[in-house]
Image (cartoon, rainbow, N blue to C red):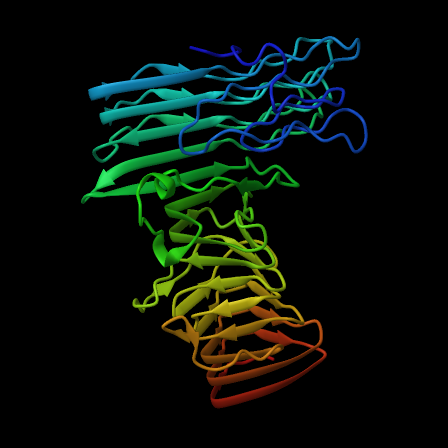
Length: 407
């Protein structure tokens, strides 16, 4: 174990404000006063080696507790983990009102990885109403398929009573499948509201190490799988200053997570131009003005938030759009959509207009607009009690299939 062996002097994610939690993979919990933000983010997602940071000071200005340490484990053959690898941050002492320390780093590399143990990089508790520490970073690298079936925990914590939660840590897995490394990222927000967004800062080191290596869809960032659980929010930074992109081959989750596409960003979600298939990613989406979401030809909205999709940017690649039963999709004033061939729009996108092959609203689904909207489709299908709402609209459809009480 290396719990509580983090930076002695504070660390780059130290909570500065009184009672604020330390940050690491995400921000630490807010401090005791108003507008007091927890410690900031640092460290590597892919190859984590940074220590956890101290929590913010307590009422008598005594230092907050230390964060978690770091553990680097390399096993040339078979690593069977049935015990515990612990780099948790320390919690604050009772009565100190200090913030919690952040989780540290655990990086394991092995030829084979098996077992039913525990790898833990959790943040520590704040005292009373102080903020908790953010989760740290866990990475497993394996030159064969990972067979480990134990727990991987990198979670933030809160104060012992009403203190703010620190943000989630990162769990990253990389194993070799059919000669290619399969990369997975897991984020768990523990249903904390409002969520502390995870912001992907770092491109994979392979881009610098292997000449000519290009990510799927020529994106800046890429994963084979991303899992978002318990209201987790996922964003990316701008590595080139003004624009950025990410390709995610498969999205997993519990319907509560959020992919947030900000302006001048492009998200390729389960998208390859040469493939035609149906996708229903179990997450929610916000696409800001000047943001763009590439999705498969047949796309179904199933997220549990309301709205499950807020589109004020561009939805690209989708020809058949379905909104699942009782789900809501909201379209903003700058929304457009487009179909592409060889990375070229087949028709110029028109702001305020959706052009689709098929638009299907399942029972009690809702499509809403803040103002005037135009829909141009071959087939418009509206099941029982489905609704399209706007101040005014123009609908052009070759075929209509509208059930009772749909409006």
